Image (cartoon, rainbow, N blue to C red; front, side, top):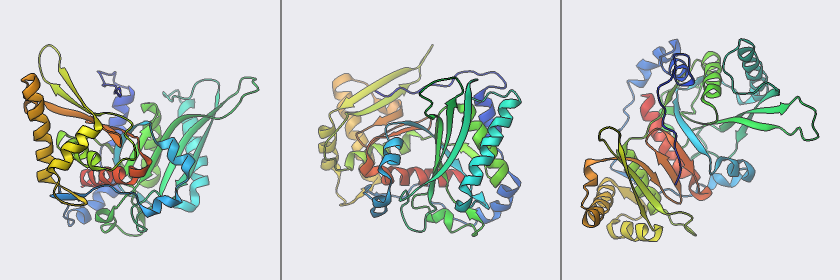
Length: 346
């Protein structure tokens, strides 16, 4: 079972408080965009969605980069459009962000790079990481280090990684001009202090802002249904659910693991719409799980809160943590996350 850290209380200048300071609050550009966004009608939850499929554009993916993205725990953020961002300037952005991080470290700020390392930042595109040709190209940012100590092995070490993408983002693309680059979904892996520093640089450079992207129980139920519906060549993990029971003095968690083939059989028994998942089917799928659990353990899971789902496709936690496990359905998983990010931007 995946482990997820639960943030506790933090000092005033901690990473968590800095993330809140840096990633929340409208910039002047954001205020100017409000009038445009208010004209756009975002549907909170469509009554049906397509079952995730492999995109033809994935054929352009770099297998090594995709493999690097899988099986890592990512923290999710939504991101407003970047103003005057250019894919032709990635090398310059690498230099500028490297200098910014060095300056922040020189100020004595908490940058997680260590004392004996040279810092290097790289920007690179993630070809094929899109739903349609119209989507903005995804790109990857990494903070790398090389030890200054004498050693035969001075290979670069990845300290922090973040990537930006837009999968089937038409609802946002239609609201902004060509001066903006829409990559509403941002995923980060590494120290929160580094995420805060990178976020600050992006905000100052591209007049954007980040917001943590949580996943509520309703959307976790959709994820559980859509990912169970995916056809797998082989199942790598059990289908697991985690519910939280509020009680005193501390909460109680209930874990429920199902053999993936049994979960797929249950889904097939309630699924009636070829190639799609409907709200009715999601509700029926979850109700069947609740009834089965109550029959065996006499516990009403409907009175608890779903906080995590895990399948062979991906696992997700309500606090905005996700781990993508299957390359075949990578685009499908990112498409739903992009939808949630766009809805939060509104």
